[in-house]
Image (cartoon, rainbow, N blue to C red; front, top):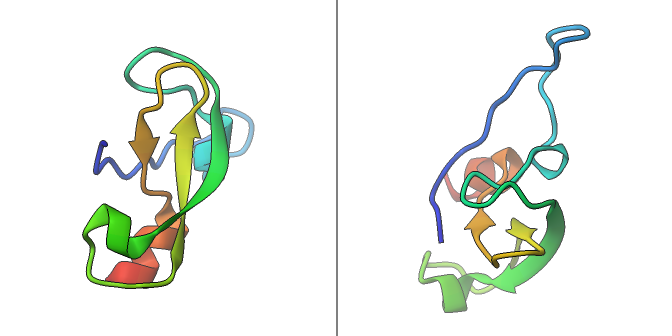
Length: 71
């Protein structure tokens, strides 16, 4: 799983693009929203956390909102 924090900007207005609108950095596949328990990720929390997960290769990314929760 990648610990990447994705922070792209749209070309239209410079607004941040949602992680779920970006392509997977590993394979270029589409990312979708999923939840995974913090315990299974080993991040020190028990609640469910939102991740961006690639439908093609299974790579996972921590979206901005999840990183802010863990900070």
